Length: 114
Image (cartoon, one colour):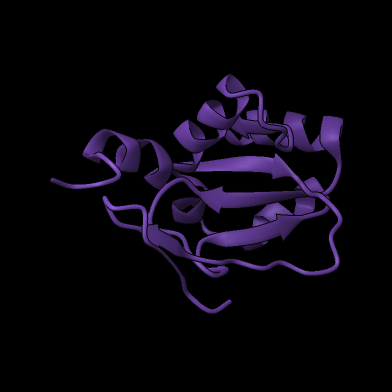
């Protein structure tokens, strides 16, 4: 038996469905848009200012992610990167941490190092 379920993994492997799941669960997240055109992306930038464009799938540790402060910044990105992506309003933070934890069916938990 696979835990979490394949359906749960499918939700969280795609940044768009991940963000939608967070909103549905009433977990705060930054404003975002799954866009179909460069014009939609530019409109989002004009409304939200500095933003982050992220690949919806197969992005990690900065791969497939770039910051955009103004629409002109998009000219430096290849159209391929802009396909299958979302844009999020940038949020200010001092440090980003990630931690992995696992729990077996008996409730034993293991926390991996940061």
